[in-house]
Each structure stands twice: as structure tokens, then as C-alpha cells.
Length: 379
Ligand SMILES: *Cc1c(COP(=O)(O)O)cnc(C)c1O
Image 1: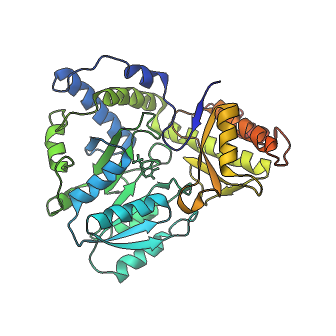
Image 2: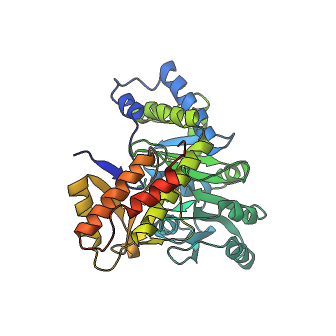
Image 3: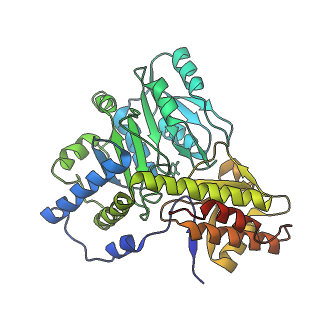
């Protein structure tokens, strides 16, 4: 049986990316590596839609989140954190670990923050240094209005820090045009790589914050990363094979064009949602993201049983709920290297598994609904 992965990280790997990692290692202090790394940095700028540097770290996404806090802030700094799910909580946890004064803007899980709420908080509280948010709150499957939030934040001395780890490449994110100060991304999501790399871009306004930050950093020092980047290098040994594979992944994105990649995600997400509704299920989270579709579990269907059946009988791996949504939702990702038939496949497996577990449905209704969205589309 083939295994198919539909989780919001890691995501499936294209052949080009897989093969690249099978190559013999090259040394990182060579002209050969520098050339590859320079190409990667250019490709990242394209995906981030920025003219400024994008730094690459050997770490999962959380590493880049932590590096942002360590490099831009000082103990006691006051920051706002949009807390609408597990990843919003992560910003506040990291901030507090570093001694920041975190003021949460709590959002009901499955809902999104209204930029006006942020505007009010920024007026109410003095000396806010930053606003932290997600692009997509992967745990609740919603997408935040980053453009709207940036309009509010840019009028103040605060910087806007966006965890776009799952959303970059699946939703529009115009880093420079929308004046987003910090964008954080990771490798194992829309970038179609294994876990192990994370990325940070900084606006000029954010870069100024590195000059006053007094939190300790060594491995993560952005100034060292910048000095090395200018020479096509990283300060310490980079994850060479992952960076070589990233060049291939970026080539695929450039060939398809970022706008088309995003449109493909949008379409696959729409097909997944329509299919779920046609099966009689409820889509959780509003507005829903292009990254992942959360589906409320119907009465009588247990999360663990459903996911075990999907995995054991159909080779399909989907995600469960996180935190307080554990056991209440399942999440089907349509992220990264995904196409129309991946969606038809996962919906078919979902229909068969639900029926076998005693849920009342007519086979094929979800598949048909997905087909109706996807037919005639040159994805
Ligand atoms: C996946 C993800 C992360 C990072 O997780 P890591 O396991 O550290 O890579 C952070 N934020 C969001 C929104 C994510 O989807």
C-alpha cells in the first residue's frame, strides 16, 4: 500500500527534492556551496515577496520564532500577541520565557482577530514594541487578515511579526508591499522540504530593533547571519543537503509561479471543504485557510479510530486536533506538493472509512463535490 501524507507539516516531497538529498555531501566553505546558497537566497526573496535578506537557520520553525524574539527585544519589553490557537500560544510562551511582558489578545479558537481590536489595544497600552500573529493559525485552520493588521500596526512605532510558517506559499503575503516587519517560515510546509530549515525576513524598521536588543543570543545572532550572507555563507555549518534540496523546491515554485501555487492551494482547499459539506460534515474555522481544512468530528466517530482506519486501511495520514480541539476535529492538509487527485483520494478514503465506522453517508457524494470544483481546472 502506498502511504500518502495530508498533514500541515511535514508535507509530501517532490521527486526532485528527494533525489537532491541523496547526493554526496559538498563542503560548505566552497564557491560551489556559495553559488547554491546565493540562488536559494534569491528564490526565498521571490517567495517572501521581498527585496530584503531572508536568513536561513538549521532548525524547525519554532527556532526561527525564538530567534526573532532573542534578536529584536529586551527583557521587560511590552508586546501584543494574537492568541487564537496553539501557535499564538507559542508566541506568548516564547516571549514570556525571554522575560517579555506579553499582553494577549485572546481570540476564540476557530475565529480570527479583527484588525480594529489590535488598533484599540495599541491605543490603550503605551509603549507596545511589537504585535505577534500568525498568517494561518494551523491549529484552528483559519487565515488572519495580515494586510489589514499591517495597516494598523505600521502607523505606530511597533513592528508586526508574522508567523507564516504554514501560510507562506499557500496565501498571498506581500512582505514589502504590505510592510510586514518580520516574516517567519519553515521548510516542511508549502516549501515541500523535510523539516529542519527555518527562515526570517526583516524590514528596515525591524532591523533597527537589533541595535537595541539586549537579550542573549549567539547561534541565532542576526548580525552574524547578515555578515555571512553577504559572502554567500552562514556563520556555522549549514544544513547543506537541505539547502541543496531547497534550491530544487524553489525552482519548482518559480516555474509554476507563486501566484499559481497560491491559486492551486485555494482551489484544493475549496474542493476539500465542498466535499466535507457534501458528506454532511461541518467545516471548522472561519475564514478557512488554503493550508488545511478542519472538520468537526460527527457524533459517534472517534478521532483515533478514524485516523487509525485511514492509515491502516488506506495509507492516508491526516492530522488530529491540537490542544483543546484534540478529539473534536480532524485536519486534512492540502499543502505543498499536492494536486487534484490527491484531494479526490483523501476524500474517497474519508468516505469509505466513515462508512465503515458506522457513519451514515452515500458513497461518492464528497468525491463528486470535489470533482465539480476541480474539473476543467488546469492546476
Ligand atoms: C508548523 C507550524 C509552526 C512550527 O512548528 P515547528 O514544529 O517548530 O516547525 C509554527 N507555527 C505555525 C503556524 C505552524 O503551522
